[in-house]
Amino acid sequence: MYLLDTDVLIDIQRDYEPAVAWFESLDELPGVPGYVAMELIQKADNARQVEQAMRLVAPFEIVWPSELDCDLALQHFRACHLSHGLGLLDALIGACALSSDKTLCTFNAKHFRMIPGLELEKPYDK
Image 1: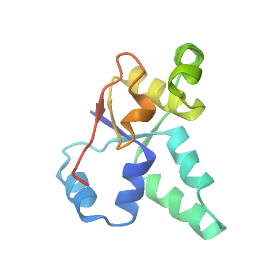
Image 2 (image 1 turned 45 degrees about the vertical axis):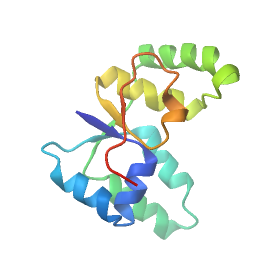
Image 3 (image 1 turned 90 degrees about the vertical axis):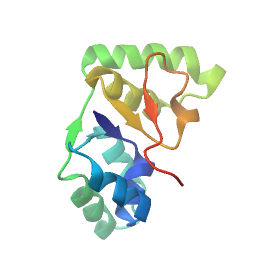
Image 4 (image 1 turned 120 degrees about the vertical axis):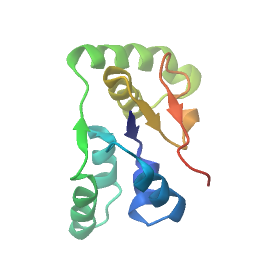
């Protein structure tokens, strides 16, 4: 079904009403790429915020790419980093979504749209 990008998780964490309403309407709990969990930790300024990030992602399945998925991420990164600005973590997050055959929920489509076959969705209005 869905994998959540960092921006969507932050909206849920901040109790942004459209994000919470969308999340509560889901029939199935989405997954979270492991790299997204790591991005949440990276944004933390102190140990309390690290613990908040870990509590936020605790209910979700953490999705990691396989070695083959990492090879594909490397191909996309090589092909699109200079030409389209594809970031390293975004290439790996995209690989997680592709390998799990799930739609990546994000408001940062520009970070991912150059990855062939990756399905993106803006899950609610901002």
